[in-house]
Image (cartoon, rainbow, N blue to C red; front, side):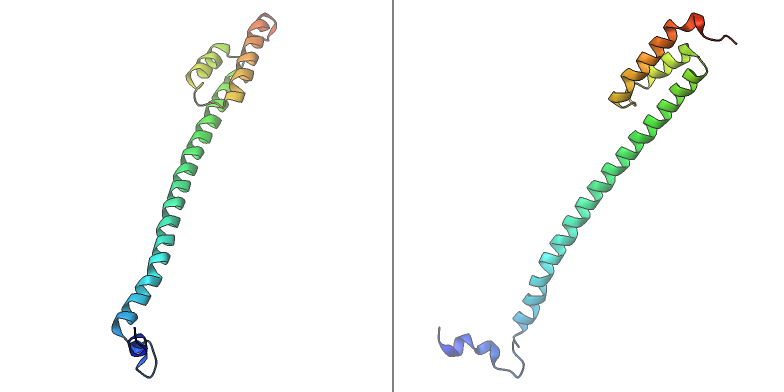
Length: 116
């Protein structure tokens, strides 16, 4: 390539002057910005969906634990057992066994528990 070929774009007062350069450069600058925007949107949406699922799981765990604790506080062992069985999937694994143990202990001590 000759010097004239390489400098043909710079033949105006404020280079670059060619229409193609004026169109390609802004588009080339938009592609990375658009890519970052789309990637950020997808990551944020996935994160928000995951947080919604986690919030629903926590809310159902709290409701199930509340039902079971309410029945245990009233020494209603049958309702406690039924709620524990029905909500076993909603409870965290670390909470299920202690509740079963409390229920079994209360069942063992049932003859000594206050009667209404």
